[in-house]
Amino acid sequence: MKAFDTLLWRIIGAVVPRLGAAYIRFVFRTVRWEWVGREVVDDVLATRKPIVAAFWHGRLLMMAPVMAESVQPLHVVISNNRDGELIARLIERFGGFTLRGSTRHPRKRKDKGSNAVARTGMERLKAGDLIGITPDGPRGPRMRAQEGVAALSMWTGVPVVPFAWATRRARMLASWDRFMLPWPFDRGVYVVGDPIFPVNGDGDEAVEAHRLAIEAGLNAVTRLADERVGRVPVEPE
Image (cartoon, rainbow, N blue to C red; front, side, top):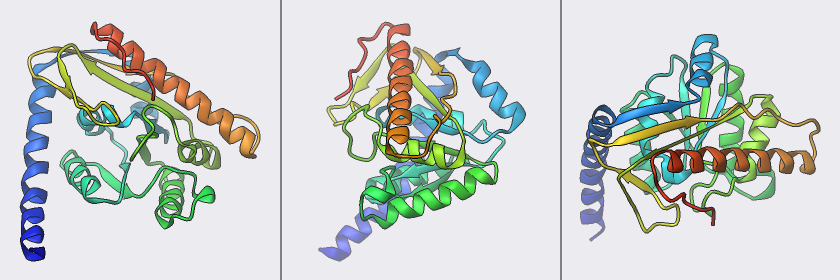
């Protein structure tokens, strides 16, 4: 049975990312996209400034084509499990890199993955690369930012830029994150918020204030994206 499971996983690991990438590219090319806040992205591309690009776990799928536009190396934080492995392989098909671990605050839980992500993330940002994070991943609660993204931003002085997307017609999966699966030949929007810079201070209160600002910024762009295409906005959990 173990040998069968291993074989099945190898097949899934080889096929699913390939099909997923093909579907994402098909949707991206056939949807009529509008951009709100595109100037923020253009500024990042022009100046090559490091940023932490943040988007909710439920809106991960169509961020992949946007990652492919980056002229700087982009490293996406992905959970260190089998689901994360599939996502990592998919992201690599769009030219991205992955950091395997958690976005939780490494000082507040005994998790080597969190520490490794924090350490490598700081190194990559200081080198001028970009970091992509789903602050409510890998298990939620939905649309509630964990402290890791705020801590990483404050340790490096790099701002967090909130991203969201939505399409008019899409299937909302019955998962904890209300994962959005878009249909092709539709109308969609990408929304980019203003950079959220670290607040003054370095204690827990400062980290919490920054976390709340990131969470509010992400929820604002996600709500705007949903409203822009005529969808009922997804609410935080």
